[in-house]
Length: 148
Image 1 (cartoon, rainbow, N blue to C red):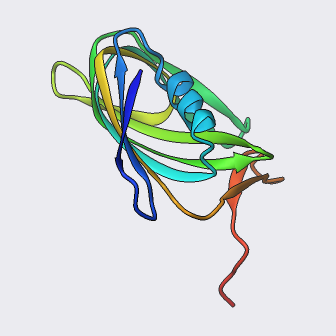
Image 2: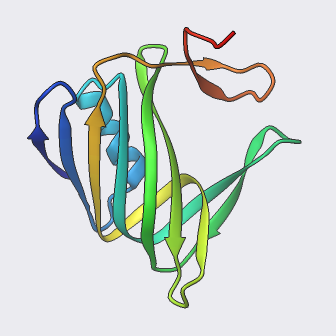
């Protein structure tokens, strides 16, 4: 993984490039920790040699794992970073394009890069925090203000 700060105004922005055999979740989480990100969003394009997409099954309150065991284009990967306790946590969704033009999508549980994944990460100047939601069992972003 390589990165470069490309904008350092109020919302710092980085280009992060992952290489063949890098795992997207592990690399992006390591980047978030190294930069001490407490609120950020990112987008990416590239390709995976294999991946695992998740579908949240409401009845089991767990992710169904859908393995993608082929080379695919990362048509779109979007995500955010928020704190869970004092540690950053990622939340990513991906659309993966197969060789015949069909698309697969879901929560990105694993993504093994080949040959590259080009990520643009933008930090927010505020902190976002996750809290455990008792209904879903998920750590969801909690905001202080509500509409009446």
